[in-house]
Image (cartoon, rainbow, N blue to C red; front, side):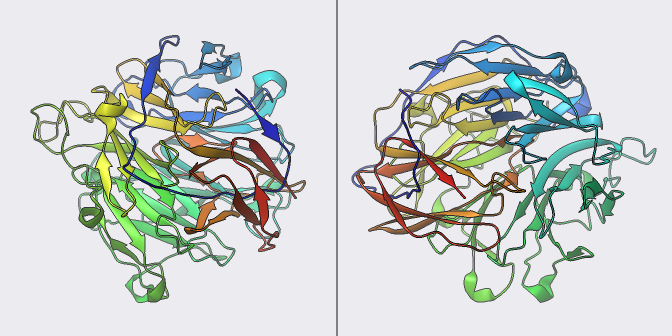
Length: 503
C-alpha cells in the first residue's frame, strides 16, 4: 500500500522488547549476472532510484563484461520488476553506478563507473537517458571503483570524486601501481580540468561527508592494501581550495585495511557520523570521538559485536571478505542495523569460499547480533554491491544484491513489524536533494540524525525516499538542517506515510 502526505516532518525511535528478526522472501526477476575477467573481480554495483516519477524506485545493475541492465518497478502490494533497458544504459565494462540530480532539474541522473571512460547521463522522461551536452565533463580512461558527490559553497554543479583502483596501463603492476582519486570541481557552469589526489592507494570506496558539522564535506577514501602493499592507509582529504590529507597532527588515526566499502550513520545519538568499513577479515566499526576536536574515530568493532570476520554458516573457518555495507532499520524498531555483502574475490585460498552475507541487528543496548539466516538473506553467492531500499513503499526495507558470476537476487521484506516513515527532501535551487543536509528526528529516546550523502558503499548508491523505523512511536518530531545551515522548526507527524519536506 502506498500512502502519502505532503507536510513538514519528524522521525522518531522507540525500541522495546526482544529484537525481532525480519522475514525476507526472494522474488523472481529477469536473470542478470555481473561477470568478467580480473578487472571485474571488484565492483558489481547497483543504483536504486526512481526514474519515471511514480515514487517507486527502479534499479540499474552493473554487468561487467555483460551489458548493464535497468529494471523497471511494476510493484503493487508485492514487489515486481521487469527488465527494460534503454540503449544508452546497455553499456559494457560497468562496475557500478550512483544516482544524483546533477543539474537540479528535478529528474535524477546517473554517474556510471566503468573500466574505461566513466559516463554521466542526464535523466529524461520515463527512464530515458542521454549524455549531457554541456558543463565540460571529460572522463579519463581508468579503472573506476568508487564515486561520491557533494555541492561546495556557491556552486550550481556538484563536485565529483571518482576513486580509481590499479593503473592497468602500468607495466610494473599490478602491485604498488595504484591510480589516484580523480576530483572534478566546477567553476561556474562548467568543470575544471580533473585534479588527481595523490598518493592514491587503490581505492574501492569514497564518500563526501560533513563529519564535523561545519557545512563543508570532506572526502573519505577506503583503500585496498592487497595492491598498495606498503606505505598506504585509509585517507581523509580536507576539501580546502587545495585539498590536503588529514594527518595525525589533526587527530586522524592512521590504519591500513583491505578496504572495500564505506557506510556512514550516527548510531550513538551525538549528531556525528560513525563509520562501518568492509575488509578482508574483520569489518571495522568506528565511533566518532567529539572530544578529540579533530577527525578521530575510535574502534568499537569487538565491543559492539560487528566483526563479521568469519562465515556464520557452514564449516569454512577462513576469514570473510566484505564488500558493500549499508545501515538501515530492517525491523522498524528505531535502531539502525547493518547489512554486509560477502564473497570471495574469486578463488583466494586464504579467504572463505562459502561466505554468507550478514544482517547485523542492533539491540537496545547497542550490541549487534547476526540474523541473516533467520531473515532469509544469507546467500552463499559471491556478493558484491547491494541496496537496502523500500521497493514498494510499504514502510519496510527490501534488498537487492548483485553477485559475481551468479544471478542477481531481490528480496521482499515480508514482516509486519514497527511503525515507519518515508521522507522526501527537496529544495528549489541548486543541489535539489539537499546533499550535505541533515534530517533530525526526536522522540523520548533522543535525537537521531541522518546526513544526506551520495557515495560510499561498494559501487552502489541510492537516491529517493529516506526510510525511518519508528518502533512503537505513534507521534514523532522532525526538522531539517539545510546544507547552508538553515534549520526548520520541529514539526509533529504521524507514522505510516510519505512526508515531503519542501524548502
